[in-house]
Image (cartoon, rainbow, N blue to C red; front, side):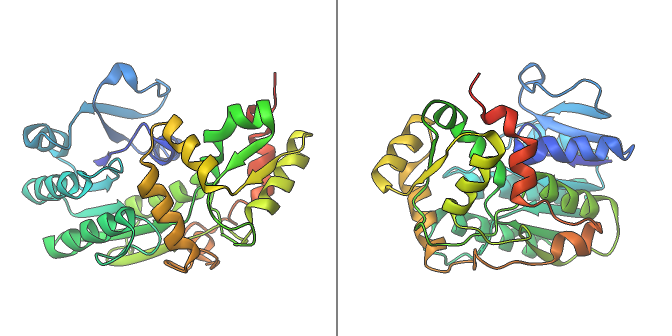
Length: 285
């Protein structure tokens, strides 16, 4: 049995979809079944679980051989992932695939990156076979800005306009995760997952403009980005801190790796394809 945490998020949903397409029965850990909004056609068994509740983790992990670990970004992330790792150890889980972040390190100046580094170290120290997935920024993060793109033709971040970043599609993240969860040979590996090209946000805006038939521009103002982050409920200081670290070379966000093809034997999705695939979502109705 394979257990998927973070099952209702951008990456977790895609992992479940791809596992189901392969005919693999998976168990999805959710807080409330009625809130998942996942297709009922998926070949998925749902179990209620909470990272803060050891008993629920024990129940969710019963009979599980491999687990995918993805918890929400928060100040409690390290403690929650520690709870999960201890429960996985008690349950005799053979392998944990952890969804991490580029540049993960316990001494990172970014709190977001540092938490993942600390959790990675706990998993290494647990004695459970591990696989670390370290993806770059997701192309699907642009979906945060659907309303702004529809109404104003604009999206925000604080990376410099000249900074190139190898954005990765969540569908490719899922492909690597599914391989690590269903195949042998991925134990003890750390995978740096990137898209096939490094683009500035201005270049991404131009490609998106062409896909939706409307001018889209990138606003790199920290002030405007901070207002947007606050509006959608994210921790402003932590996100700006992360962007500053990435812009200063933490994790080498402009690097392009061949990980996706090497693991899945599929060419990684280019930003142009992402823009075309999601173009209807970005178009004003």
